[in-house]
Image (cartoon, rainbow, N blue to C red; front, side, top):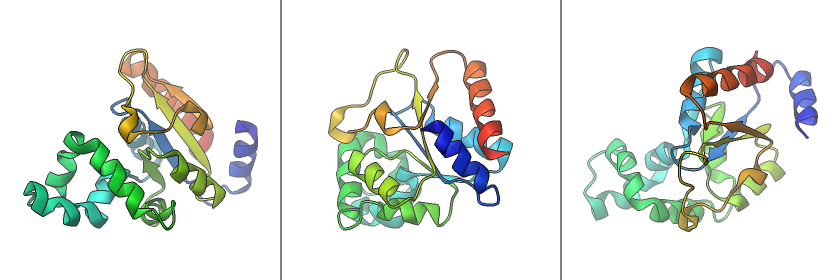
Length: 180
């Protein structure tokens, strides 16, 4: 499967591949995206920040007294299930709706948490490659109330169970293979 993706990427070198980076909370997804940005100029947006900017701030500001979308975003860890359900509801008519909005502005989507959304995005051909970041040997897995995906959703798995330097080396090797 990875070979097919790499062949497809080779054929479309002029077009940047669209990436989805997934994994459990705090396992290194944003760090991977930041490294891709710094080293290869890849732009990214997290699903939570996008959701706050696009619709969640407006839905939650009165309930929680938020003054800005950033304040709403920073408080997301206290309302994971509520955010998950709100994003699922936002995507109810088109499971790829938020992903399409993110990829209009970015090369990479970070943090999708719903299997139906991933499957619909892949069905619609929105992502060229799905990368799972895994630190489960040293960090807990996400609660199922706001996360119904696993490693089987990904084409590539990047282990993040060692040192930061080891993780960075893996990420840069992957980036050089995919993005240069």
